Image 1 (spheres, chains in turn green, yellow):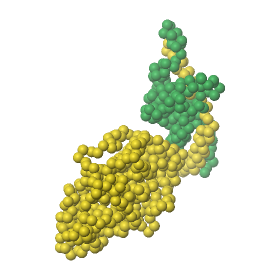
Image 2 (cartoon, each protein chain N blue to C red):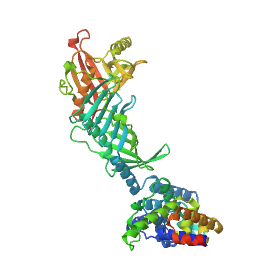
Image 3 (cartoon, one colour):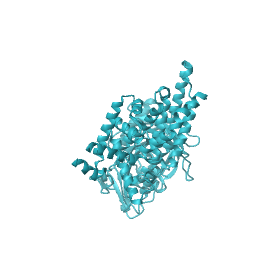
Length: 182
Length: 422
């Protein structure tokens, strides 16, 4: 074991361990699926380690790998029709501070939102997750995806439009009416 | 304005639904993965020392990690796959599969189950048992003689046997004893698990190993390989194939109405199935034997002519039979008749040498003309076998002795390989 490699882990992975784990959990929401997706992501990181070390934004790339793995798992589950029924979502997904009735409602909403994200294309889904969920700036996403910033914006815009259609029934009606009269 | 507001609403909805904290239990599991990853990473050869040797080491390490992380399924993931497969079997409303007892020639038993209590056993040697556990009725069909035996109003013995068969597969434990690895078949990734089963106290031949192969995608059992090891004998292999869980089952398979063209089995002296003469099969080890036979198809009445052909052939070859003639019957489409011969005998087509390995077998010797009431005898024989907790594991065999010219001197040994049903 070399000190250099220990330092690399400390520099590149240790600061974002929490973000890596959280990124996968937020998308998978199932302990077993999360562990599987996380393991797949770590294997990808291991295989691409030299490229990651040399990357201009290694941590964004690592987060992208985690999100890719989780999004792939989500897409597979949605495609197979095995995405969780809202009622089956783990209780700890919901905001524990919310009243009981709202907790159930929140879990249903979470399930629908994640299912919709699972229906997005790979590029759109990953861009949405990186930008909206992980709040990574466009520039860093572009670096991680190896594309131009404008391309990332396009993916986010198109993904957002698709989600707007898929989740129209969850968008507050008052705001919709305001919009339609504007 | 609409787009901006709607965009904000969508963004807010997504953030609200995804900004959740990771549960402590999940975080613990992921941190263990990170610790393993860090350990592996810190032992990765440095690229600063590039060269063929280092590259080779890196490739080897990559392979090792790939094997460790992916190819050999992780225990937690693999365990879940097995538990899911076992759970599917346990809760299946319907289940169908084929037990391959022997290959070349194929000896198989098809089992079908439909909740709440419909069962069917279809043996490749021409016997089919359909039972309705809810009413206690059953019908045994002897396809070779186009006869049937219908019973009701009592605990159906053959149903107990089929229960045992079914329970072998339906009551898999939640966890396997050993992880075998994976194999790819027809585009499917199969994970292998081994279950060790100790011999029971009731004559079970020896320890068994059940290798259960589960489709990692569907989490359904794909097939099972069973190895039975008896002391001092080569391992015997059986297989379970064509497993269908929860698939649509043809309900006509469980129809207890006798098929068209089938007649009720004649019981000697007008005896009913309940008061037929007692016939108790003896369970024991049958020794290995070889026989020169001629494969046959069509009515069993050709048996005498077939034996004459074999006898004539053996005479021309200078081979002396070592026992009385015999016949093995899978169905009217395939049966054999011939003579036992020394183990090293050879034969030319259309004659064949068949080797019958030593096996657990049920047998009984009945006195009377050869072939008389064959269907009734076999029905009683089968019931005796099943009633003792065994199940057929091979075709029906008859060994004929006595004087062909004097019916009163004739004896028939009925024999069938069997396996402990549970």
